[in-house]
Image (tube, rainbow over all chains, first blue to last red; front, side, top):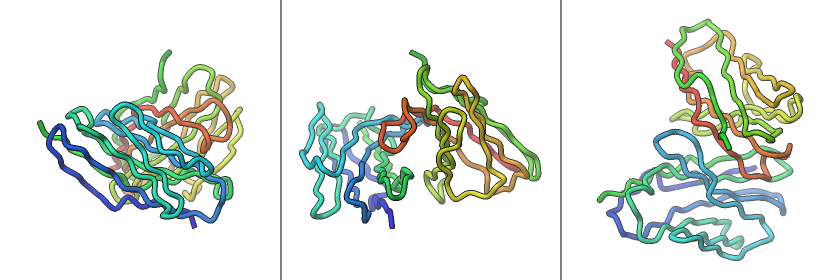
Length: 114
Length: 115
């Protein structure tokens, strides 16, 4: 079965706080891809990162960082020094060839207050 | 470069009617996929088209259909609308056919309300 779990429904922080969004996935395939997308109030999903199952190297891009751990089937996303513009719904997603569909988690709504 | 364009932005229909939504992908993108987003079910894959052919389909009833034209523009149609079809319908495009492996570029969606 393919599944993505984002246990945090909503997170509220004050500007400049660090925040981590959790993502746990399930798949029986050995080759798969994990994604994070951001959905601002305007509605369109914006691609943030893609990671394949063979690359466990963590990545940092500005204030964003991702921690991929196959041992715990997790692909967590951290925003350092959050800003009001980071307020959005964040989705984790999984794709594998065996299932051939992009499966999204339920999303985490992040509210950053000034 | 223009992004993914979806029209109309908002739509109000009544039960039993049918509706057609339009999506223009980014120029050069040949794959178009559709997703339904609702508060209860979240984001669910509807179908994907590449070169005018449906390459993959989600678990939706036959009332949901789509097509892609030679210029890669796509339309989706929902017939005999039900209240549960009220949702944000998102279109996404990518360069090649394997939509899952590539990053997707999404439109702002069409918000459909069925009364």
